[in-house]
Length: 242
Image 1 (cartoon, rainbow, N blue to C red):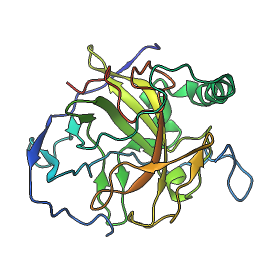
Image 2 (cartoon, rainbow, N blue to C red; image 1 turned 135 degrees about the vertical axis):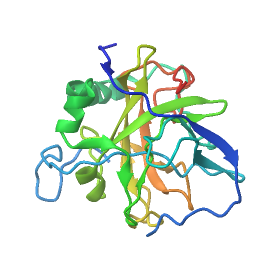
Image 3 (cartoon, helix red, strand yellow; image 1 turned 90 degrees about the horizontal axis):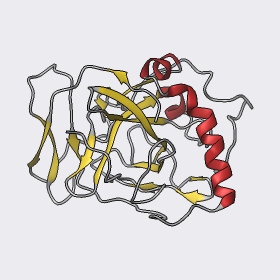
Image 4 (tube, one colour; image 1 turned 180 degrees about the vertical axis):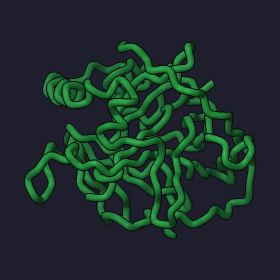
């Protein structure tokens, strides 16, 4: 694994039981944009965080004071687990190698920021969401989501230009790149996006956190860290937000 970049650790989130009401968040294969240009050239920046983890009345509430940087968060959705420990087929390995080559420059968070990625994502209501370290009570965690606003805006997917870079906290207090995440806004997102599931690497994307959560179509690929649950699982049992 490449060296992690030191970063101040955000304060912790707590998983609490809350009413089922939730603030309404409404307020393919490798390809390029319609203009034929690659998408990394755009300079807009913003980050992704699954702050919509609501299942059977469970949601995220910050434990720190208002205005403090949010920290570990828990999403109550088990999500997809694909392939498990099964070997990934040779053709898929070749595509994943191209994804690694396209994201190898982003092991340092500073490099990701220079390319337009920021922690969390600003939705149509002007709220920055998914800013905490996303974890699951039993399935492991994802980590911190750094979104690219320009890639989120185009409602298309390019395997070599993921909308999100996922970083896991390290024991030394830094962050290390562990996964990429392709994200496309659905018709139920805010602002609304596409009405049918997009595909990436020949697989249909899925909605992990439905309304009143952000309702993104997404797919993870743990191209920079081993995942016992599978290359394309949403959660990694070897990752921890604590």
